[in-house]
View 1 (tube, rainbow, N blue to C red):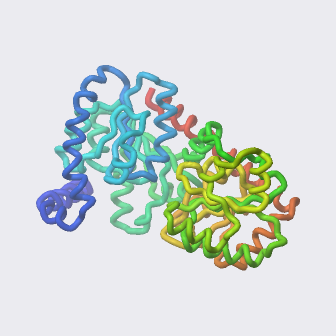
View 2 (tube, rainbow, N blue to C red):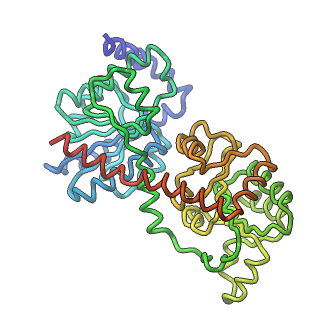
Length: 422
């Protein structure tokens, strides 16, 4: 019955599609492009021969960050495996289409009966992995018909989880999976209440493994930890104007005698943001200008006098290696930037209050290693408290234990997928 209703709704969408594309630009973009991208890759798909095929679906960029560690472990364990990565969102596909570890990257055709059958028949997957909570009933039905082992990874409680009709759809769909991997005990509780017929297990977010790996191959910097020795270093990562204004005011509260070195890393290092920092903190040097410093003595003199503005992108993960504490931006706007990156260096983390969309931030706050601040006074207070070496070392040890506990989930998930399938 649920599948009949589901396909009736999709049929209505098919009929109304000419109208929908007029008002939904994202939907129009993907409907215009998916066939083109599919045709461009069809020859490569057909040429894969008998190689084992892993199909991994992510809704968009955020979910694909959770898929990447899985793909890379698959390629490491099975170098000849053929990996098909799909996206529903145009932004996901457009931003990740050059990702090197997937053999083919595609838009996922909409879940109409005939398209789901065509897609599964064409790629002939040996394994199917869906990330988080975007999965489609007709695709799951086709995979079940062909006995393809199918898994849900990094599952969390959906934002529509309390909706009765959605829960009915969810329960029906989830029973098509071989196994569901959830992120934490709260998610496990939600999925167990659905009374599913499939096994459910907790496995931590695969992005911890990705950060753990990236840290070990981090980009070299124009600044070394030794050159900042003796300073209490705050890296303000992916900060927006609201974050910066709070930091400027907190800096004034701390006063000139409080020795702190700030490395400003704007989310977007535009001229206007850099000029804002220079206006409010005149004792700064742009990261790009460090290359012009003649020798180590001059660098040490400059670092003693000045804070640093990073006017390049792509360095944030490496810059956290210089920090004693991290301020993560976005907590006063639409959403917090990644807290897993500074957590990989076992840093105490400060951020604004908008953390409800970041499960990691919520968990780290509960763990006592992330500090939410609402104003400059609270921010200055946290920094002063963390300057105490005994308290600081306690927080660092908790941060280290929290992060390392979560490393290794990707390997365990892939091993279980392969074992279950066999």
